[in-house]
Length: 278
Image: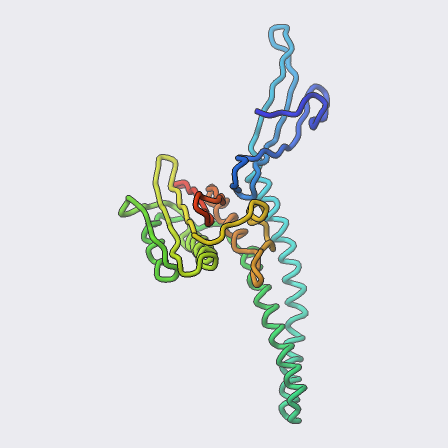
């Protein structure tokens, strides 16, 4: 355990002190829901059999902080969506009326102006819809289903090799949400590696199942990897920066874990751990 020295990082108050500390999981190139784990460190002074002792407690806070951060993002997104939608609707209506008038007076240049405005409105509406997915994501409706079979159905959309010893692998979760998660990751892998099929490994154990999706693209820089789960963050020219944020919320709602790493030989590896039946 690494703790701050006396008087550093922990404020003393009536014989006890506490702080939120950040610990990196590994110095290697890896990121788990943002790259660092947050812990609540508390220290208490106590007397036992006439001797003074210090009791130090560590409580994991990463999941709760992620949940609060995402809750804040959702509120911001709802406000932005509301304001933008209130503006887009009348602008779109006026633009349509303008196009009709431009056609009646046979003015090509004016018609082109309104067509351009209409195109930008459609792009903005698409942008809003993408971010609305994060704000609208509901609590998972869990049921038992075959995870291997679900992945097999996606092979026609995003080609990949599937390595799984089990002919059937049942877990309890929200089928639609976990399918969306797999699609998001497989889509990213396809965009990164082009026609090179991804490699998907599915294993089961006492604690649950682990799904690993690896692509053979250029990989991801460590500094990019640590920001990858933040909403709005994207290195793609036309990326919305929402896909991995949705993935993280889905995993958190299923009491699982998601992490990114750079495997030997290049590419990017997304590891998803899910409990069997929570």
